[in-house]
Image (cartoon, rainbow, N blue to C red):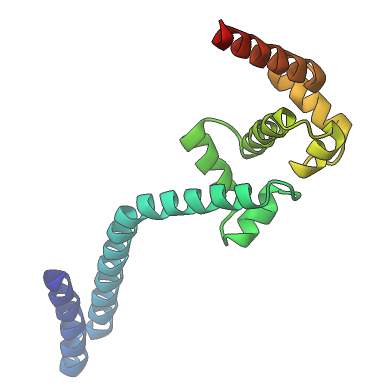
Length: 173
């Protein structure tokens, strides 16, 4: 960094010297030195931001995942999350696509359904589960569940009860 600062100082010094000399073309020389300084500054910032960008993106991604977990029962939109984190919707979408290979909305649906499966095991009514995990109503929850798992929440609950019964029977033998 010291060499970079020395270079910047030399551009500034050369521009100041050209102004004091007032030789023909001194104004063009000042412009040229200013351009060299700006290019050098831009490259310095770009190199530093490239090295920081990966860590910042990971930090942003972790914060967005935490936000989703904390607001799972609320309405969550891409625009709202982008606004809350001061980034573009596209940035959030790209993070999910590159890190998880799923869309933002698909991730939210999957997280909600996983949370719903846990609640189904606790014998909570399906209508209450739907609202608790962030679906607007039972029919939306039912459609998403059936699409994801290939069976209704009721069938899933019965299958899990049978599996639990078989496990307990197997342990008693």
